[in-house]
Each structure stands twice: as structure tokens, then as C-alpha cells.
Amino acid sequence: MADPPVLEVSELRKHFPVRKGLLRRTTGHVLAVDGVSFAIGAGETLGLVGESGCGKSTVARSVLRLIEPTSGTIWLNGADITGLGKAAMRPHRREMQIIFQDPFSSLNPRMSAGDIVAEPLRVHGMLEGRAGAERVAALFEQVGLRLGQMRNFPHEFSGGQRQRICIARALALDPKLIVADEPVSALDVSIQAQVINLMVDLQRAKRLSYLFVAHDLAVVAHISHRIAVMYLGKIVELADKRTLFRNPLHPYTEALLSAVPVANPAVKRAKRLLPGDVPSPLNPPLGCAFHPRCAYAVERCRIEAPALREVAPGHSVACHLRG
Image (cartoon, rainbow, N blue to C red; front, side, top):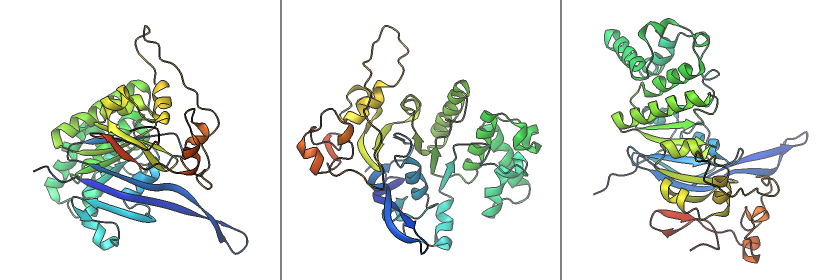
């Protein structure tokens, strides 16, 4: 019997109200996330990709209950955590942690690196005497930092080292799930590879599950087992990474892949420039949200929104013209 998913999300929605006027009346809603469903197994990485503003980070924060979802259901290790209050959520928070995009703004500049990594243990009452200090020291070694750097402050580290501190902090409580929200986009390319390789090694050693949010498909391909492509608050394609790269079915996925640099100069990949801009989530188009920019759109696409459906084993797409 297969293990149950570490994380399962069903029909997740997050709509932000738009208020105007002196009385701050609600005049509309920004449909940041609009019906997203996925699952992540133990030791698996799901990459979540898409353009800026498509709702990736909102999904990540809603899953962790850092922001409250408008509707939908979130299961963590088989437990429904959607409507839990702060006190009831506390034990579940040990099972899921986050790595933020900017490793400098997410660290307290007034705390030493050792205190930053120890803080989750202190909050959850796990920093007791010598065992707690040894735990923090072991975390520093696991992420490739020297024990002598525990007394240093964030400004004394490079960007890559600061992100290693963030990873150590995320690992402190031995979580099952780590949400990585663009964890390498603020780093130099050479440092990106080091941080990604560290995350892969830690995943293999601890059987961690990752929700890896990024806009760079090349980065996502290196760490992910499966990839979900988002557009305007919805998942439009979901498949394992090899299938997605070899046989993309959604026109938006095709356009994203055409922009990925190819290392081999002998390989020519046709560039597909998308016309127009991403529609506003405050007033999304009728039918398929992608149809105003799609070269294959037909009349049905303009009036009927396609559902995400499985067209091959493990490969789902939201497109009327596929399957």
C-alpha cells in the first residue's frame, strides 16, 4: 500500500478584496489563487512555476496558513489543518517550515546566526541545555557552515551563506515538508547550484518533501520530481519533469520551455513570444484565462474554462484542444 501524501491540497482559493472610497467598501476581488489542487508524497519535490503574479507565493503561504485561504482544504500528514486555530495549529507547524526568497530580509540582523537557528527550538520548548546546543551545532555542519560562525551576525555572511542559515533554521524542528519560495532567485548563478545541491542532499538524507516555488524552469528541473505550471491563479499543466520537458501539452508551457536556455549550441529551439500581457486577476477573461494570448484558441476557449484533467497517466492539462 502506498504511503499517504505528506501534503494534499484540494480546490484551494485565495481571493483578496479590493476596497475603495471613504467607507472602504468592497468593489471586487483579486483572484490570486482560484481552485488549485495537488499532492506531494514523502521524499518528493513538486515544482510550482509560472510568471510573476500568477499566484505561486500565495499558494505557498496559504498552504502554511501564513495567510488564510478563502476556501479549499489542506491536509498535512492526513490531518485536515484548514480551519484550525492558532493553538491547534501549533503542533502541526513543527511538521512544515519555509525558506524565503531573500535570505537577508528574512533574518533578524540583531541576532547571531546561532540564535537564529536555535529560535524555533526555543519557541517549541526543545532547546534544553547541552543537547540543544549540540543540535544547533549539528545543523550548522549539515548545511556546510563552520561552528565558529555561530556567533556571527547576518551582515557578516555572503548571500549563499545566509540562505544556508535559513535552511538550517527550517531543518531545526525536523519537519516533513519544506516550502521553498524562490530560495535561489536572489543568489548568483554559481551559488544557486550549491544551494540546490545542498537541498537535494538533505532531501535524500532526511526524506524531506519540498514544495519548490520558482519562475526559472531550468532551476526547477534540477530539483523537482514533478512540475505544476500556474497561470493566473490556476494550474494549467501537471506532470513529471521528463514528460513535461519532452511533451508539453499546454501552449503556455510550450512558451515557457522555449525560453529556457539550451547548453548545446547545435540545438536550435524555436522561440515563442507570447503576445500581450498577463490579464489582471481582478478581472480575468471569460473562458480559458490564456486564450487572449494563445495562438491555438478556438471559440470554445473564449466561453468555457477548461478543467484540469488527466490525459495520460500522471499527466494533467487544462486545455480544450488536448486529450
